[in-house]
Structure formats: C-alpha cells, structure tokens
Image 1 (cartoon, rainbow, N blue to C red):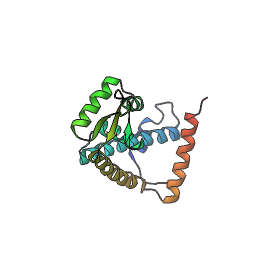
Image 2 (cartoon, rainbow, N blue to C red):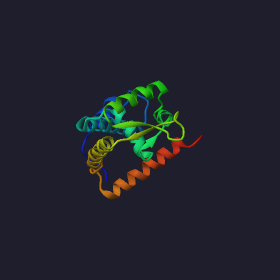
Image 3 (spheres, one colour):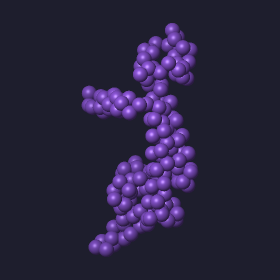
Image 4 (cartoon, helix red, strand yellow):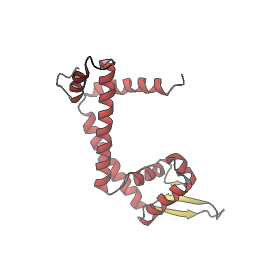
Length: 165
C-alpha cells in the first residue's frame, strides 16, 4: 500500500530536486529511516525518564538481564565498550541506587560478580513494558502483512551491509 499523504521527507526531496546528485528513492528511504530512528531515540529517552532510569543505567541493567542477572565487571565493560575505570564508576552509581550489588566469589575472593537486584529488575521490566508499547504504536501504522514485509526488507538490507564484501 502506498501512502498518499505528504510527509517531511517529501518536502525535503522537493526542496533538493535538481540541486543535489542523489537518487530520490534512495534519499527518501534513508532519510525516513533516519527520522524514524530519531523519533525512536526520543521515545526511548522519554520512557526511561518516565520510570526514573538514565540511559547508562538501563543499558547496564539490560546487559545483566540478558546474562541471567549476573556478570563480571569486565564482561559488562567489554559489552558496553567501557574502560575498567568507567565501568567501576557506573557500577558505583548503580550500587548506590540499589539496582545492582557486587558479590565476592566464594572460591576466589578476588573475583567479583555484579548481580541485578529485585529493584533493578523491576525498573528494567517497567522500562521494557512502556518501550514495547511505544514501539508497537509506531509500527501500528502498518497492517500486519506490511509489518512482515518491512521486517523482511530491512533484514535483506541489514544482511547485505553486515556481510563481508
């Protein structure tokens, strides 16, 4: 189904028609994806504010949930692309907020694991719930068959750019 309503990208394309060397179809696709991603980023930011989490806290907790609620600081730092000092500062903040706790290993006292607390898991669940609702609302502009089609098309594009040339 083709949308006949004009959007901001249509106006962008009209402004640049004949002035810039681009393919209008490609420019329309890329610009719409960029604008949708900006909208999604703002939505995620608002969702986190609504539940009282900052982005750094959510990302750290999200990684812990994916790992079953526990990881070493070095595992988290590697996934989050942080220095050890940066990870320590982040964990200090999360521990003060009682979202995570550090636990010394029983076999090796030098080993420290980071565990998600119940409070941390509850905040993550609240953020994920509101986020899922916002994302579903965004995608609801498309019929289920169109959602499946778009998902497949985006997968084709992503597979191409992710494959080694």
